[in-house]
Length: 386
Image (cartoon, rainbow, N blue to C red; front, side, top):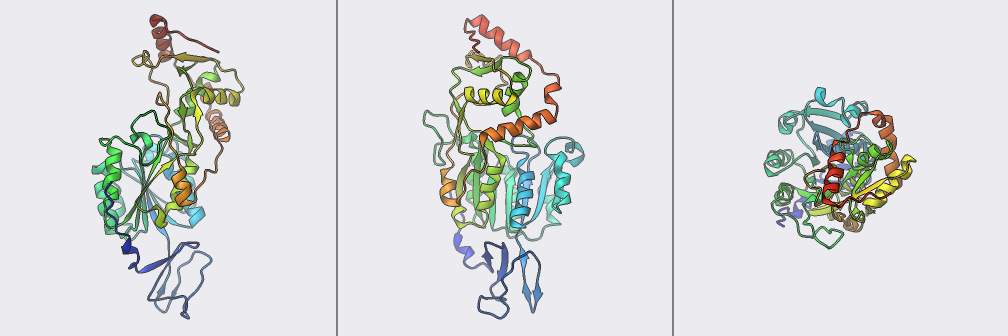
């Protein structure tokens, strides 16, 4: 891994950071012993005899689709509420096309809070005229190096000190050792890993990368991790599960990722680091199906199938057919982070939203399930088990 950032640039930086208040005070204008020194308890801008105070500001770059699309919404709210940060949220896509779907249908909440929200297909074009200076950028958008290059140039031009990147734990190579740690072997050809390497090599700002797994939470654009079970259980249908069902999976709540990222901002221990962003609790496929059954107050009818034989007939199961978990203890050690969510409560939260959106009353296709049952019957591997 190539680390290009020189941390010494912070020692010569024209500002010092007051961590608790998140304000930057120029050295030449104010020292702890000067008459002009003031301890600031709330957000404001003070101009007095050449003395300037600026609040912490940042940009969130957010994708329009996939399991990470709701991260920007939660980040923007939490940064404003917890750090009183001035946040600009740029979102890929066009508002008119996205506003009827989650999480974008809730962006009016952000505007009410005073968060600047921009929709377009080109972040640099939209932000060039409106943002002249920025403390940090959180990139939940870049998919590859080519996507990231203009954003890095923009970040350098506006004086960004830290660049935080939402990557993915999907880059880890499959092996028999579990859970994954940050220094485990990865797929070097994965575009998201190449993006990590490219960002970490940048000399003009610090970089912190996060590798989440299977994010869940309200307002998600991707709810198949739990809907797969709810859809069948509420209709009292069989739930296909890859045999033997004891494969471990990590369902991570978006709040835990957001808190990990917030703790990393302006924290030197986070510079040039990669963190597994998981909630730290693991569950088997079978236990997850049982939990969903309990929350739905319906009996579970589990249908165990041979995933290799069903490769061409069934693609709906939402998880990799292996142990896929990652250890977050590095974040606990370096950031002081800890998971604040509970898996049972998280799944219950997802089911409440499922009902509120009336998904239990929508048409549900069993076409692929029928193909799976037929394939198992033909192969002589049919194994339906309650």
